[in-house]
Amino acid sequence: MHTIRELDDTYVAHTYARFPVSITEGHGSIAIAEDGKEYIDLGSGIGVNLFGYCDRVWMEAVTSQLARVQHTSNLYYTGPCAQLAEALCTRTGMKKVFFCNSGAEANECAIKAARRYGQLHHGNDCSTMITLKDSFHGRTLTTLAATGQDHFHELFQPLTAGFVHAEANDLESVKRLVNDQVCGILMECVQGEGGVNVLSEAFVKGVRDLCDEKDLILIIDEVQTGNGRTGALYSFMNYGILPDAATTAKGIGGGLPIGAAMLGEKLQDIFTPGDNGSTFGGNPAVAAGALSNLNRLDDALFADVRRKSELIFSALNGAEGVKSISGMGLMIGIEPEFTTAREIARACLDEGVLVLTAGHNKVRLLPALNIPDELLIRALDVLKRAFAAGRE
Ligand SMILES: *Cc1c(COP(=O)(O)O)cnc(C)c1O
Image (cartoon, rainbow, N blue to C red; front, side, top):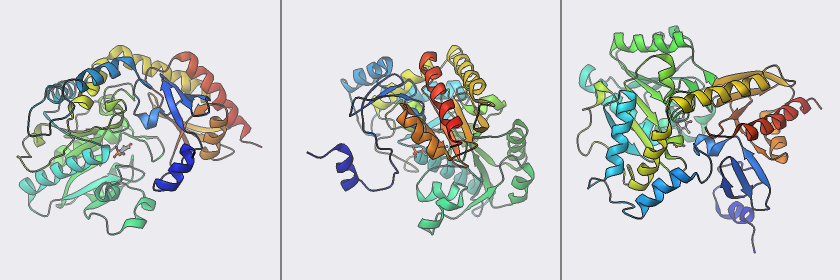
């Protein structure tokens, strides 16, 4: 008999530096490993398990749809897809939604839409996108090109052409890149993988104004920040702006693959049949689960996300071994003073707590939005000890 780990190491492509844990079960914010050890999960599958493992309400929405129709292809209409699109548009001010299966694909769709807009309104050469340094937009060749981190670019040249990178929180550096060939700007309001860097309100509003002035398409990547994560339905809502497109994935599906590119007023009629597509996009079972998730994301939940956020900030701000803490809502980055984020993650794992890491040596927390206070407080004690112990 081979262990899960042996099989995986033998047959699964080595694209991940996995921690030495096989998770076989979970409930709420507790993950249970093959050996029976229990972990408090502060990563929620990288912000995916919005209401934790095997949430009853979400499971019921998915399984009752599964028992009716699991898939039809996009040649036919299905209810959950249409209802989810309506809910997303009603709650965001967007006008149309394209469904796909991942964050990268959602960004690809939004980039395609921005390019079409540029070409139609400003000529065939208008196709360049400005993105930000330390951003992360996905792993396809185009979204890697969009990702403003050089180390992602080196291995797979040539990447898709037409992406240039400005400095986050530096409006002048964005303005310097604008010319007749630029069709839009793509950015995360809180950069996740890149180190949990929060964009300033002045910068985000400045970018919005610049896009209005130059007729550029502003796309906000809400793949990680979206769906209640930052204490608002989508992070752009914290800034009082409306983008021309917003993309989401991760948490909205609650654990099943889905991506969505939401298109605003300027882009709503940009696509005609055949311009984009996806075999699984808008899958009824996944969409039914996503709609159920969305319906639970209300003001009371956002207030609770912000309250828990304050609890985390006040526990860790100024704690021994914590050099800095950044983030918004339940998306938090903590920089260790004495050691590496990976070492902290290792130490937490030993003590039964799962955490993530991010760029610039950050420990990253993306707990389920409904994590019970009692588990959160226990996990924070473990984290505090791990940060303090890094000194040795
Ligand atoms: C995870 C992530 C992506 C990529 O999503 P996939 O579903 O892995 O393709 C894109 N943008 C941001 C901000 C992300 O956090």
